[in-house]
Amino acid sequence: MLKRQMARILTGLALLGATAIAAPAAALGLPPPGPNPDAPASTPARQTPPTATAASLSRADLCRRLRAHLTRGGRRSGLFVLEAESGAVLCRRASHRRRSLASNTKLFTTAAALARFEPDQRIPTRLWRTGRLRDGVLHGNLWLVGGGDPSLGSPAFYEAYYGGLGTNLYSLVTAVKRAGIRRVTGRLYGDDTFFDRLRGVADSGYATSPYIGPLSALSFNAGYAGPTPRRFSSNPPRLAAAKLAQALGRAGVGVRERVALRKLPEGPSRDQIGVTLSPRMSVLVNLTNVYSNNFFAEMLLKRLGAKFGARGSTAAGAAVVERFARKHRSGVHAVDGSGLTATNRASPAEVGRLLESMRENYAGGRFVGSLAVAGREGTLAERMRGTAAERRCRAKTGTIHGVSALSGYCFNRSGRVMVFSILMNGVTDVYRARLAQDRMAALIAGY
Image (cartoon, rainbow, N blue to C red; front, top):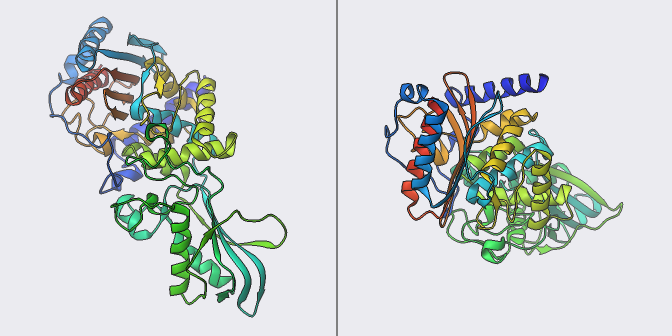
């Protein structure tokens, strides 16, 4: 009973978010930089039956209509619809057959990140010194140690692309000056050893992907070489360290601009002199889901592996996500964190059970609130407008070649909370698949 009461409170808060309060990512003027197969799309408004028509349907009629739309989206499609309060499954079709998830994979990644790290946790990027400090001169080295913060960069970059929600690398300049350091005889080293040095995922042969950018525990401006998203850096940790060295020089601190990479040594001779913290995990998850940010998803996955798995790798993070799903009455075959690799697979029922379970989790309200509001923001800003789903459904899209997906929650005027997962494989016309999904979401929202 207590668990159901908590779920009701959490979803009530999420409903307020869907109808009145803009989530942090709603302030974003632009989607993440770079190409993305799951970029925001547009479908015609007012193409679905009005709410009254859906509300008058019997459960059998509702399911019949949902299945009819489903078959128009892709030849290998599955469906799962659950009424959250009662736990009753209202409709299913091939719901236990696993399919490629595309960016619905991010549901598993971000749910695990929110629950395992806790919503208010922040990711640190630390600055250390080694050697002796005498009369303002550090006879030793500085060490910039990355913790896998996907939002680390320059204020100009994250103002332009993350709505001002990011981590200012240059704030560490103040820490150096407060420590009394005016000159460094040694070097500034970048330490990116919290993660492995594979820059991509399986989809790109673990090399840098144009859809993600280079992955590194010490990244700067999402791995781009300059202040605009034109080309990626060939060495993200070296770039981050060099940017800090340049900023120190401009601030009057004498340090070589020629930086190097090396792991911070153990021992009593080292001293932490500064730290800059990411936005809260709930904000990072919001930035990941609303616009389907592949770079953020993969960085969060590697951090899961580093903290709760064998190492800071994609494979270790995927194993953590799979264990998390199993503990939450669900399951997934995870290969990466973003869904770009086609072999990320789960069934509609497994996606639905994850969504249902997260409502009961202490982080559930933040998770529900991280999904885009239909007709209002992110990848759903131009979809479902003028339908019963507008402003009443929060969902995650998914798009790769031959795959289109939509899964999430609808908060109906009748007071019902509906959980749904639509996974379409064998898609030949993505526009037609999205239109079918929008009509299905409107029927679910209006039921």
